[in-house]
Image 1 (cartoon, one colour):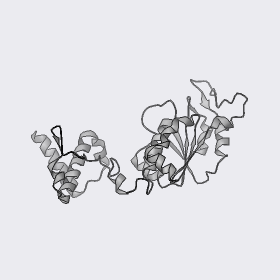
Image 2 (cartoon, rainbow, N blue to C red; image 1 turned 30 degrees about the vertical axis):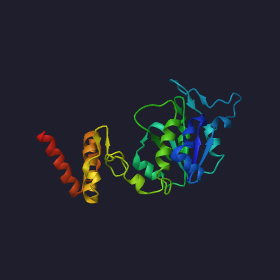
Image 3 (cartoon, rainbow, N blue to C red; image 1 turned 180 degrees about the vertical axis):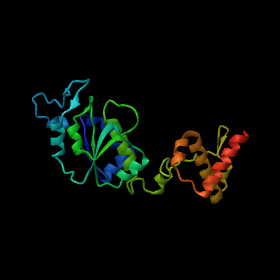
Image 4 (spheres, one colour; image 1 turned 180 degrees about the horizontal axis):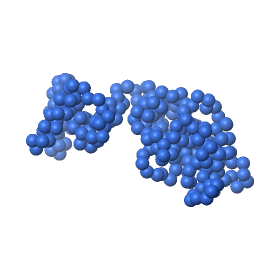
Length: 242
């Protein structure tokens, strides 16, 4: 996958040199390219922003530097993402969608926003959540991390991400490692039993209980099968008894 990032602050992406994404870059599973669109500003002062027509607060990014930056590298079939708090909310399903692309372009803004004409270059306006960041770099770095780990062979095993929270539609079940007893906090006996079916059922029950407790909104969109319905009803009955 090729990733192109239009940004005024490429140094903010140092996190992409480390961990899973860093290894993906070193193994050439992804090719990350930075484009500082200030380099393409044609005015003497190298300004990339100006006051909006009609008045208003703040400054807008001008179209010329960004249009010329986009023209400087191939992106004919790319998914072009504009970081914008008003855009589509980024989630696991969106990350899975992006992981199938051959090229993604991230357009990171600053100041009050973008000249509307810049959006003619964009395929998706994307938001990390219902809040406003100083710029788009942090949001883009999060989206890249969430997406790259889903690319085949980046994590090594497909199952490494299939059980993640949100991948299945439910939150992930609790997990434990050695020692079995840490300062009186013990690993659940079922996980020590070696009985794979019981372990599967326990994990499913814990996943449903955790989702019901922390993110009940996910259950509203999740299509429960017969087994999950039965488990959830049992959890609800336990709550009533308590």
